[in-house]
Image (cartoon, rainbow, N blue to C red):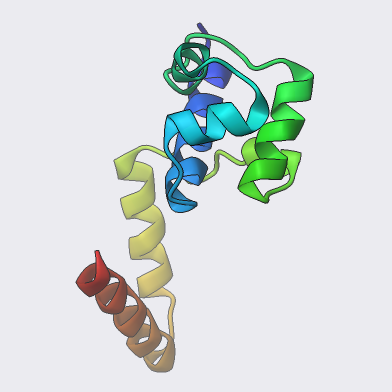
Length: 108
């Protein structure tokens, strides 16, 4: 399947895990067989329109949020963006970035 199918599957998986739901729990909540839901998350198929709306509802996000793939950038682009943000930041912003990053790293 295409990039959209793969990216949507990854995004749904990411949001499902953030809600601490299993594939079985989410597939049951939307009325889909777990095997079909697994195919969806792995980029093997696109969900039907009504399932997209159900998935968004169960995950408590908008349909638009399901299609927000900006975070799925390649590592080199992410590194460039981070380095640029750091280079252009004030001292106060650098301290804030440092606290945020290291507090997240410690909790992972």
